[in-house]
Amino acid sequence: MKSHLWLFSLFSTLWSSAAPEADGCEEGGGCREDFQPVNYSSPLLPQHPGHMFSEHLDLSKQQLSAVPSGKFRSFCRLKVLFLSDNNISSLDDGTFCPLENLLKLDLRRNTISSLGQGFSLGLGSLKELLLARNKLTHLSAGSFLQLGELQRLDLSANAIRSIDKMAFRGLTSLRQLHLEDNQLECLSAGIFPMLQRLEMLHLQENQIKVIDADVFTPLTSLAVLNLTNNNLTSICFRTFLSILSYSTHILLKGNQWHCNCDLQRVFHKLRDVRRLSLDDYSSLHCTKPQELWGHQLSEVESKLCVAETVTVLIITLTVVITVVASIVMAERNRKKRTGKHWSEDSDMSYDSQS
Ligand SMILES: *[C@@H]1O[C@H](CO)[C@@H](O)[C@H](O)[C@H]1NC(C)=O
Ligand SMILES: *[C@@H]1O[C@H](CO)[C@@H](O)[C@H](O)[C@H]1NC(C)=O
Ligand SMILES: *[C@@H]1O[C@H](CO)[C@@H](O)[C@H](O)[C@H]1NC(C)=O
Ligand SMILES: *[C@@H]1O[C@H](CO)[C@@H](O)[C@H](O)[C@H]1NC(C)=O
Image (cartoon, rainbow, N blue to C red; front, side, top):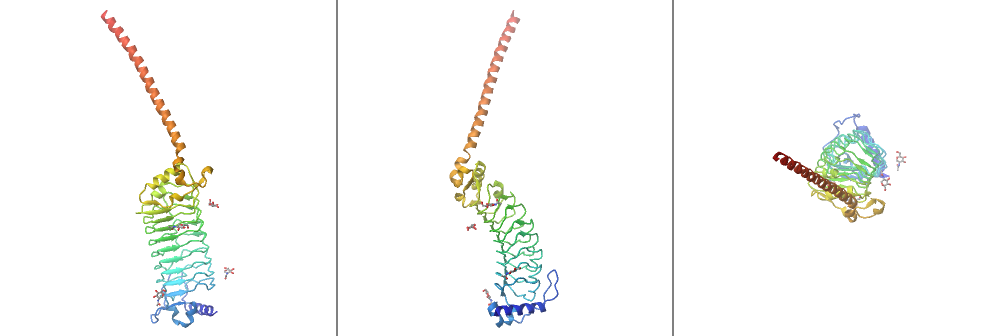
């Protein structure tokens, strides 16, 4: 009860003190220097009139349904802002404008279904953005454009199906990207541009079936690629070969491998690439063909190319036999012909002599 009252007064202060809205990020006045930074969480608030100058603001579990744009204008000292466990369904562009000192923004467990182009306005210092357990279905271009300092982006447990090619543009410092537990089916080339610092890419628990061969090429620092529990049936050698990082651990357990000779060959080649570690190779299971269902790929791999080897042997044998046969034939013909020539020659010499 107390905290609700406080919230009410906090927001009414903000409403009345805020300058008229602008689309971009304007310099907010109102940041006075005569209060020491304090930390506080809601229950303590009424005792701290200096809340406007605090570094940590905890507004989690307050049943907030909206955060009107620009209302944080006077919180210029803020470093950590908790808005988790509320009922926030949308965020206006510029909502967090200009929280220039904010390092961590926690929006987990709300009902946010989309992020606008101006979502990141004013968040140029942010290092950690947590959006797990919301209702995002699509990531559009430009949403994270201003987040040049961001190191950790958690988008896990949403319902993301599609990612715009330029959605992650601007995230030049990003080290960890959490996309696990979403509904991705396809990773198209170009969705991870300019993420040269990215070390961990969490894509487990999706429904990924198709991976474009060049999608991981820009990730030159990648150390962990987690593709556990997806719908992969096969992979291209080039897809992983194109990861040029010093050392990358790739996790592929829990997919729906179609165990055939092609797959065996790709894995055989991948395991020879020094910089790639297929850590859970021995736990990969076959889904197809029917007779190999549930078998470990590593156990059946030696048999997968047997049919192909036999075919190749038969073809080789056929070729060899044909070649040998034609050589023999040619030789026999030559002998026949030379024999004839010889007898013609001797006839001739005989004639001339006579
Ligand atoms: C606020 O809390 C953070 C982390 O709990 C701590 O690092 C910081 O020193 C605290 N600041 C003040 C002014 O108490
Ligand atoms: C959350 O917001 C929706 C409408 O946006 C409303 O129907 C629902 O009752 C709210 N839930 C809570 C717990 O406040
Ligand atoms: C990869 O994902 C699986 C499934 O969620 C998880 O159990 C495992 O710890 C993850 N491994 C790494 C290295 O992230
Ligand atoms: C992925 O596999 C799961 C479990 O086998 C299945 O229910 C789902 O429909 C598959 N998704 C796609 C896109 O194939």
